[in-house]
Image 1 (cartoon, helix red, strand yellow):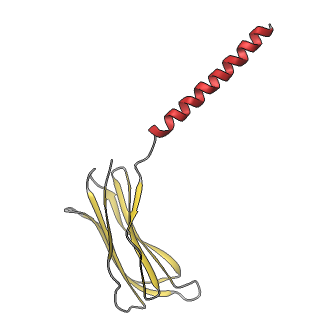
Image 2 (cartoon, rainbow, N blue to C red; image 1 turned 180 degrees about the vertical axis):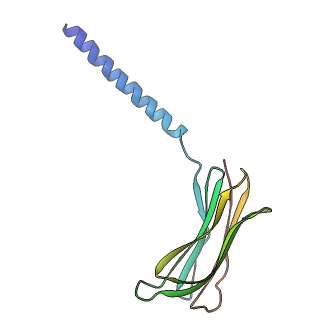
Image 3 (spheres, helix red, strand yellow; image 1 turned 30 degrees about the vertical axis):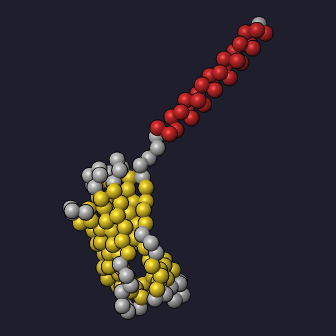
Length: 144
């Protein structure tokens, strides 16, 4: 009876190790293709901004991040941004005045695009409705 209990315990340990091995082996196979690429950051006129493209499989969307002002003294900002498939359709755009209370994100558009397509996003802003800063841009090729 004692041998049966020992063999049963050994079988349970081996089954647990085999299951753990399968789980570890399955981990890398489920890796996602989602990635994000951002432009360099521009700082000037009491604001900071950059633009990013995020891809997940054949889906792509872009957004701009603006930092400036504070909850008690917001920055008056005029923005302009767009995103598109290089040599193809526009994915979206944004423009107009807004107030930034510390930080803000502006969605520039997104859609399902073809594998291998290159998505480009551009963004520029002006602090206190003064002159626009330089346009920052980023390009990302969609990998499926």
